[in-house]
Length: 172
Image (tube, rainbow, N blue to C red; front, side, top):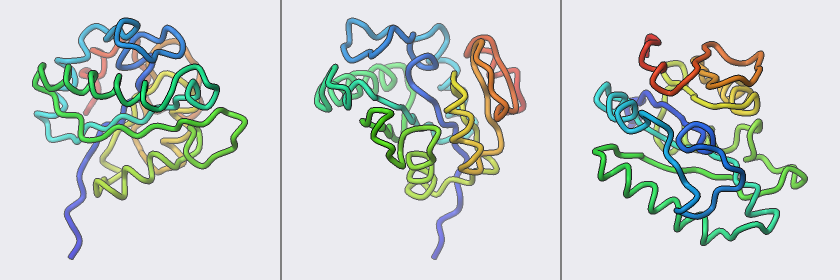
């Protein structure tokens, strides 16, 4: 028996959920972007499954450990929970760009795993990212709605927003 497919919003982490200070691995360096909590709360209320997909090459480069990442992720998830937001899953690629893995965006590994494990309908789902690699991965994974946040350039995005609260002005 197949489970009914869910609609999801996939979020990149650094630059979308938190300010990207470069290789963020500690709570004291993690600053949530303005309005991320109410935006994600509203998306959850609209029935979206919320999933984070993040490249974490700092692990592969030896800047911080897998344990550091997991500790920060647990803290981030607890902060979301305190704000009434449930993040269903966090997928990460720990490899450096030179590793040529199947999970590092723009490869589709993390997205396809999440789609499979959470029975997500890519046609009804959204990807929010701040880099062309986020948009390219989402496009290749069949996610129809791809939102580019900020000033980056991407031929794969379907929407562009200046700040995370602008997401709510889209037909999401």
